[in-house]
Image 1 (cartoon, helix red, strand yellow):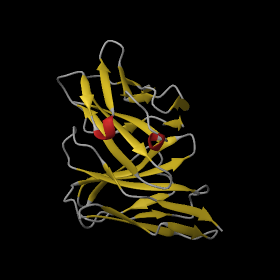
Image 2 (image 1 turned 60 degrees about the vertical axis):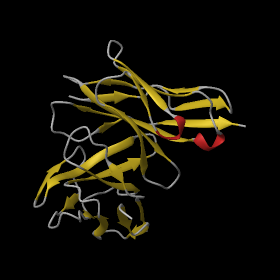
Image 3 (image 1 turned 180 degrees about the horizontal axis):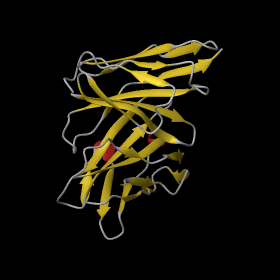
Image 4 (image 1 turned 30 degrees about the horizontal axis):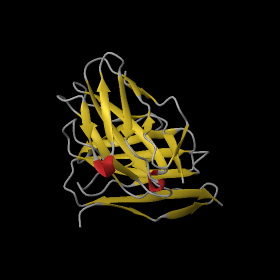
Length: 114
Length: 113
């Protein structure tokens, strides 16, 4: 079975500071990992994904994520947070060998304070 | 402009009534999905379809029904058997390859009158 945990319901960070949103996963095989962002009353927007290769993945809007196989983590990061980054962030996983839909975490609300 | 269109944006249901949420995509994606979003619970999968005329139940299919008669369309019916239908409903689509991301519509908010 696949699962994703986002251990923090809320993350607060000052504008200009680095931000991290945490994600850990569980799959029986190797994972495909995704990050999405959701603004109020909107659908999810794709930010980035890890398939294979380089553990540091770069995505949209200056976001990046680091895949760590030993810790089964895929934390989302940004070097300098903007107020406009305030939103709900979702991590999702799919087993490489499975033919199943994505499994999403419960989301982390990021608040960037000016 | 390619994308996923969900309609209506807001929908109200009376007791005992079935309502249908529309989802249309022009991305030429084979797979389509319906999720329910409640505060603090993330996204829960209701139904998904990987090909026309075929669909599978997700984690919370009870009280819902779907059809997939056309590649572009995947309507969701919330039946009267769904006793707590108030939620934000999201439709998504993707190419069938497992590493492809899902693309989402802007959702339908369903409330009870």
